[in-house]
Figure 1 (spheres, rainbow, N blue to C red):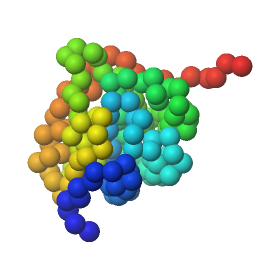
Figure 2 (cartoon, rainbow, N blue to C red):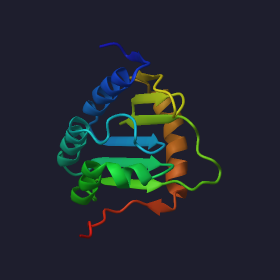
Figure 3 (cartoon, rainbow, N blue to C red):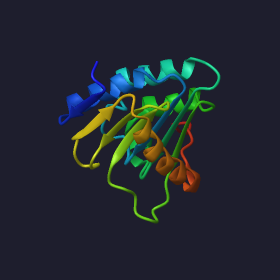
Figure 4 (cartoon, one colour):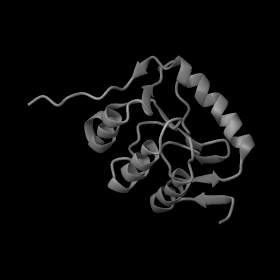
Length: 159
């Protein structure tokens, strides 16, 4: 498998994301606008994340969003994962100041990075064995994570 994969279409993006997430051994960090792209309400994506969360102690999934409306309204399986794996999976909503960056990225462990150049386009790149990219984006992610005031919590549906 090549260490660099370019993608331009939603199908290519989802395939690159699947490939990257399946390689995670202990940490996944996702910076996304609202999780409306990338198949986060699809069973296949949920299965990958569920398998990762089941692997045991020391695993961590952190998702940082600019807006959680899509997640809470349309991604019921993802919200269910949050209910089951709340000790492994944490989702936060960043503050609106300063305005959120327009890119989206996923970091896996210390060496895997996938980056979309703009939240409104699917075009981007995935790099494996890219320690430098993960460090640079990881510093940005961690800084925003610490400042993010809102934590998404699973809610029971009222009938």
